[in-house]
Length: 131
Image (tube, rainbow, N blue to C red; front, side, top):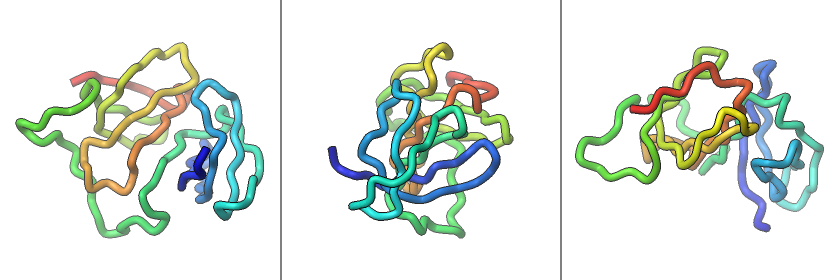
């Protein structure tokens, strides 16, 4: 499996940027390395708020994500607003959601967002509202 760029957002507020190739939604842990060739350290899902699959590690610090869907655009999945325990709100689409699972993927509504997709940890989510 190819290594992908991710940013791990921990429940304690810590952020760790790195690479992984062994993340699977049903596995309780994965490895996070600081370079594409490093296996890295083990990260436990229950310690995370979310795992952000990013396009670029730097992002755009001055970019403000839109909190709306483009009118007339067809989206894959169900439109939803997700609220995390820290108050962050994310708007995007969800393919499958089951609060009994460890988490779920969100694809941001804003295609210019630096996040290609996000795996939200169920225990770090306060509310999922389908729109």
